[in-house]
Length: 478
Image (cartoon, rainbow, N blue to C red):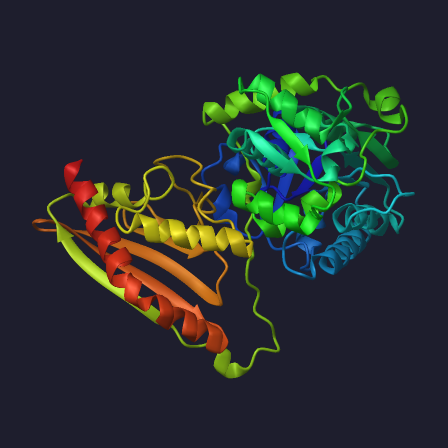
């Protein structure tokens, strides 16, 4: 059995790989920035956690490790994400070399080197080269489009086909790809981790079916029981315009959709038999992968999702003048209730998603639409669960950043705005029932941030007052 370091354990692939490794008897150490995001997963107490980031010193994470698994990426994390990916990979390689790690396993992206690759695929390849630029053997698995419940690629496909019976499509819908099921990706990862003879070099992994994106959409519609979708190709529709179109229709924000759409212009097909010869053939057909992903989505049995990753929609810069921060605006409100504090807490933790925000719903929807247009997540992400919350969960365009069961909930806004916004509730018992305090906070950035707060302040009396009143009424009804 190996001692395995898994990075990206709170992400889509890592969150599914860890329990597989544990089931095989491996020791697993997870490098995580926010340990509380793992509080509710079943395997939390079976792994060793090291708090930190891939860009930090990694001595503690690498000590006594046999295999280091690199599952992180910076796609969609601001304009400098490509350079950050290379710095992080170099830091990881050097740390693995210093700790005498036996090998590195890296999950990258497919694409022929001879073609003009998108920034996303080009960066994925460069990360592989950076990790390999040293004595530690590196096995680079290059995957095509990953099909599985909760993957960004599958969610983009699902929403496009579900929502639009007629689509004006760019020319990239005719590009060929070889989608692979998430279950096959995990199987390949486990095989190379467990191998007594280290796999070294590049292994392309794809499913048994080669299709265009148009054929992929047609197959999804067929599996989902939808009427045949009509595609109208428009060769002038650029990736930039396409990404905003995807951002409007799907829960994938434009900041993430742009590099994904850019990559769809590149053909991603397995070009040799190396992977099949040495690791075996993929086990799931494309139809089966879509069927399974769709059924798990309908049953609300999605163990991990691309939406679990933090979306950093606004980054502070060291060049900001000192007066641009420091100021905090707030809107605080309190109410008493005949309901129990537990009922109030439950009412708070069920906000958003299909339930909505109680009052001024049209204002929330307008703000969500504007956010989508500007490239943010909008309201389309919904919730992981209609009633349960845990740290790291998304709630429409909010993220859960703090929880004290039965007492306190804090959300951070991931909508695009010139500053940082949070929304929190604190409940407590009283002799005659309970009380609740709601506080919206906003830290503006520069003059634009201040102008933003003052421009929306008149709507707070409608939105926040109605929100708190709705929470209390909901608690008292139950």
